[in-house]
Length: 510
Image 1 (spheres, rainbow, N blue to C red):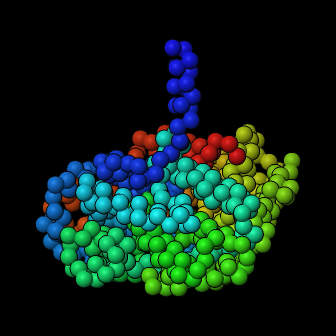
Image 2 (tube, one colour):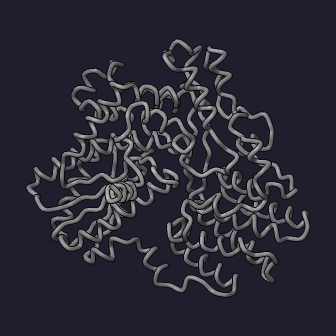
């Protein structure tokens, strides 16, 4: 008996730490998509939570047809959904992150997770997985551990893409990297119906709303002023919908490669990134041609600037920024020299994963400081410069800034730092995401700074609608979309002035 118990414990220990969204039942999938981390898959300060608002909207919509709850068309409004503009490079490139109108989002989740619809989706993904030479590794996952879903998704990438790529070096001599240009922005919404029902059926029944693909297409158009080019970025739901189209593309690619007479190859796909393994450069380029031609039919094109051929498969399997950081001197006893090493790496590889890891390690270092270092003002300038050139690092760089600000002696000096930071970022457009995290970094600091980003105004206690709900005729449903529910005041008051590593880090060990 004791042996059986021990075996049971071992079995529990070996249980995977995550499971694919396709392993969920319809009701489990609905709960998965209707939580904060799925609605908003980018990092926000801990006092933001969309859970209660989404649940309230869901209760109002259950069993109801949204078409009967409209007084006008949300497509006529340019502010039905809220867009946060995040600068990408410290210059003039930017990424729109969309907080979809909660009613439109929840209604779409309800439609997708109706039992019959969910079963049909799972069957269609089973079709997408039939080509045994193309492995799609980017389906959303649900954590079964203490880690967040996002952390498990990153671990899955490491295991299924980087580690698997290294393993394939035994079988292939060439690795080609390719990705789709502006994938989400270029995605044709009608292609969702093609993916779920085949292009022939979808074109014959393009106005038939018994087809789930047409329902999803229409729902996304409602979120984007009727546009048919592009889907919103910023939610796990949209990542999942993108996988429908990209999975359909996998079928087309496999067929094109078979027609070309190529048998021995392997493709690993993570969202819009492709890793092509082949015996020779000639074969690899022939496969690349098949991919490019198949994607054109769906309105996509490959990014020629990011296409790269490696004849050293192991070296090509690990990102160059990671290799360089692993081989470099990563730190220094002097805090300023340490941060300059990180900054120099960031200038070579902005927004890279290795840069974010290096900053997480630096945050762990400064978090222990009790006294201000001699070079405090210089450290502040360097941290802000890193945030300027690598906007993806802003949660961590603002956490470091919050610690450094806590070591500044007077409120007036802290205010001067904030003012100078905003002036620096004022030279580039679209810095709403930076404002959100700068507001968190100065929470309880006494600086009293005001910000333009609507979410900042909401967090500051101002009345800010965020979404335009004037198109909703139902009073209870409109009341459910109360943006004030998004701010958890009790949690906001309890948060310390200094952002702790646990608030911005996905992993405990860096």
